[in-house]
Length: 196
Length: 212
Length: 210
Image 1 (cartoon, chains in turn green, yellow, brown):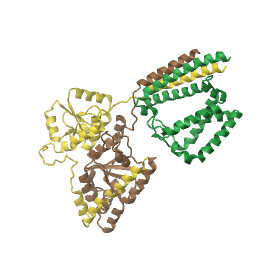
Image 2: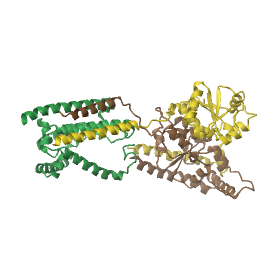
Image 3: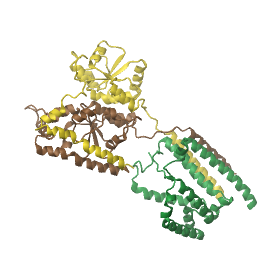
Image 4: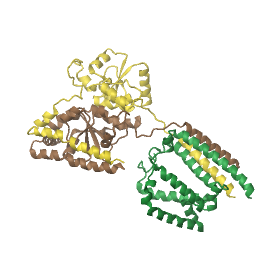
């Protein structure tokens, strides 16, 4: 059946409408999870609040398990879904940069917008910086183009790169995330005792 | 406050998630029939021509009522009543994939009885024959010439004839000669020949480079 | 820790464990035997030689002729504009239709018509292609043998035949002249005719690609 647009079940004209609906839902969930607070987000780096990790891991694991089952049931064809091409160099460089920005600013791009919506000033500043960063990036793009397109691996998935089955990888990832949940909740319960 | 609320919501979503997966697994589409023969083997088998039964042999098997062969008439019952191969069994085309039919066929292949399928012409029986071949019955045979040929030339059918009429895939005419004959000269024949090839080759290249 | 979390952890673990044992599913367009059976019982998959002749004369861009006979037979004579896809060269080593053939067969809005000397080989190609989920495939009933009998050398109907038969005969007679190309002026049309038809199709392929 799925992916709906690739298979011609939904017209590509609906792309933006669907994007809008999913975007609103995404923003709502971010806000509802408390991601509009930079303290909560930065907490994962200082070790007093692991909501970010738990929310994102839950989202990943649920989507992963769901897609694997849907693929098996024939509701979606995983071989047809769009996979972003991997550029190894830029992923590493960009990941480090983004991590620094995350810790320093307490927001990631998406959450900074939810922060603005509920009227946080720091989120407003963060977004200003984000726009300046975008401007700088596009200005110096010709010089960093080699890094940006460096280490191209094509549209590769983890299971393809490692050569393991999708089911095995899902299982390992579920175990890893469950361990992460338990471990972080143990840390947090200890933290709370000392904090409060 | 937030925490209690949260865990309740979590439980509801978790139940919904599990329910969706369970419903999906239960309602999962189970294939009714499964292909046993892949297309490559099918083509190979067609090229070998081992699934064809000549009318001469058919007459021989039918008249001595050979127990190793069963004739399946896929025409409708009226045509069947009007005339059919002796001891043939009428299974109208629409019933071909029904459970009862396939059960019967399973029994035949268990008893190593060869199924021979025929219609009015070979064309009528061809697709049904191929579908049965692709399911679990690779040894199904098709009657060349169909019932039309069988009934018409019943008396003089013999395998000895040089190029019998029931080999329909053999060109009956020299097409190029006829095309030239109806035209004014032989120049035309060459043109018709050469023309279609050229644009095709070009197109092939364009398609390959134009792909995603 | 909350009790519900244990339940949730257990559910996730169970689902993850289940995912481990899910077999890999093959998603392809392959028709199920039942679907193939229904498609094959549809009599409209056969087209008559008259329909094909009419479309060739009209230079109908939706018609795409495919000759399923071996290459030597194709070379000696084929219908104008036909492409040669012999049955024995239809599939690659994986048992799938060669992708270059797919570029001809799986074009939206184009009706591929198979023909051979009779219609058996063409029909066999039809079944194989149809199983792989390709739509808009047709078989020319009777094949080239019947093509000769009806189009190239039409038989004059008897005097008492209904007027439709005479109309058909007139059409066939005209078509015969067209394909045999009795005069040079008509012949010129035959030569120029396949080229624009191909171009139109080319566009369809390109837009359908991405």
